[in-house]
Length: 62
Image 1 (cartoon, rainbow, N blue to C red):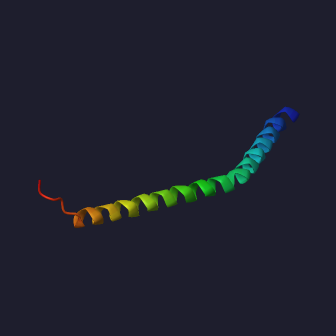
Image 2 (cartoon, one colour):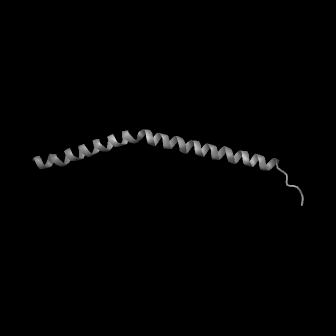
Image 3 (cartoon, rainbow, N blue to C red):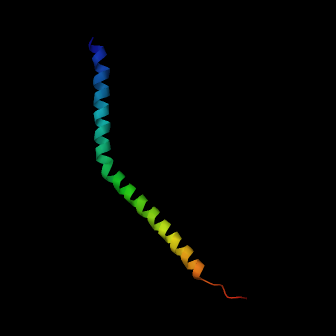
């Protein structure tokens, strides 16, 4: 009977350990997500600005 309970205790311990690790990693995950969103936004607005500048720019004839 005791051998049936031991795997459940081990599983419960490991799940608690994994949950603790996830909580410890949350600040890093949030920071990485913020950096990713900011990079995406800067790239998007940079591309729009470049397209606007290229529309206004006229190449001189050779």
